[in-house]
Length: 297
Image (cartoon, rainbow, N blue to C red; front, side, top):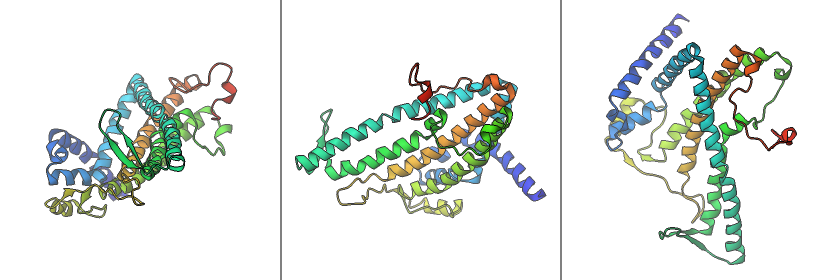
């Protein structure tokens, strides 16, 4: 127990040092023209050091937010504004999916076109009809990955309620705080660890993995080069599947940010009482007289 506590304290302390070092030496991890800098970025992007650097920022911001409630509410509103704005924007891709599917069906089944050329500004982009058909999977993935926190804020997610509805107000807020830290964050972090190296394995060569240490990656940096995979699942099919891997990482980041926002919101609502329930919450509405149907779509 003492060893684990000492390890935790040491890593928290090193987190502050690593933040300071990263800020003062940006070229050591942001200069991707240098193989060593690229490998450092890859290694530390899913490392214990990065986790505790983020954790230290969370601790400092939380302490400041406890002392100055307006700061905590500002963070909540900012993160929720970002999630809502991104979700509302990306949701329009659903309309694009429908239009493109109709286009594919007509051009392929009715007019028997084999290729489609799109040149809105004079620059031609030609791909097979099958390519555009498979691209619809990307649109669907964008909606799922980038609208997840928007759906959470709007209350559109599935929630299994066993005891939540019958307990007192402050008990519900404790459940929300515990759930955001013990369920949302660990799942997002675990998924990030897999998604991070899964992404980079399709962008560079030689391949990298989570089991490799920094020393091994530094040796690989001498021969590292960009090698973005553009292999489709079918001949002449959609070949940008590395974009799905980027969406996985974005999904994890959005969930972690929303977990922080939800924890802060639940904490402030716990402290301020029932009168602050839903304070500053920007939820979509169907309009006056349609309140009974809201939350069911």
